[in-house]
Length: 393
Image 1: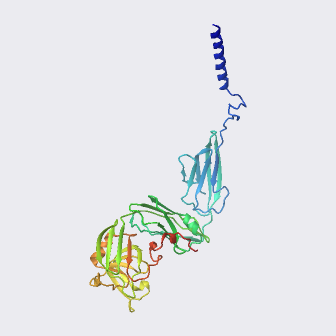
Image 2: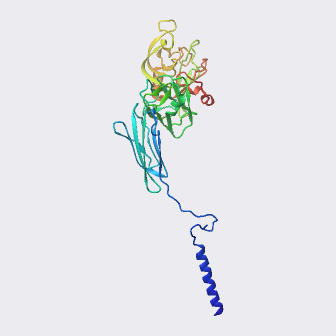
Image 3: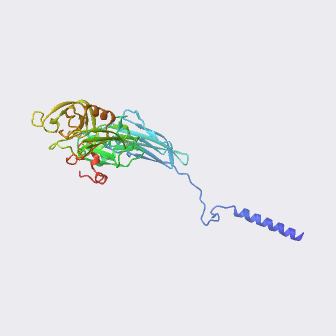
């Protein structure tokens, strides 16, 4: 009985000690050596860009609202007439943005409400004014048509209507999105032409979306972008034609499988066809071949003006592959053209029906000088390190 009683009191003492160890009072350390403090819920904070009172805001720059320590519940942007300018609120309430372009020389008012972690609403009101209508605007055009299918060599070309003084601003306004993701880069070919190309040929089936959102963007020299342009296209089968000036044959492959070999005639001595890889630019039916387009008047020695049934442009300097029934006797035997690739009418039609913008035509053994990378869409004439090297302004 004596031992049992002692053991009972001992057990109660242990339990009491354990209960005491689980209890902390004000200023206690909780057994960890550091004081325990209550978590204080923070109020929300709102950041607006452009800031309130800002003037000469470029109308093409985005208007954005962000919330910290809370979430946005309401954002309203109104124009001078009191009309609401629609924007997009993030699903988690962390941000709101309007990026479709505002008007020139107008004052806008933005009201935002956010609820913080403390459960209390916070309101922000700001006004800003956009820059007045510019004296100069610059438009941009694309070499793509919405929904079309293009070849694996297709460059994405942005042509501006005037010299772009701020090239970096122009590049920031352009977006190229691909699925699957594709490595590529911009290069300025002239003061008005900017090209984006992939490092390697496009993968067939790739989806390409181009958005030239230049409206209201400052492009340098006091000029602003005039309007936006956008297009989405799909890369089709890999079609490559190799024209050999020595064998006088053209071999055509689809997805790396050879499908046809055709006799050809290329540029004769004195008019040799430049060697290299061309990219198909455009296709034509009943097209007039005119030597005057490259500086030789039709009524002078060596000049011509001839209607052809099928013609496909490969360069700005006047190189085409086209139907040439008058040279069928020389096709497959010798080079007699003024620089173009001559085919029979049947073969020219077959190839034009098969090919599309962005397909590739490589000329070898022609005796001609190398094709200039800036001649047409001949971007594949530049190795990737040269393509990505800085370009002078």
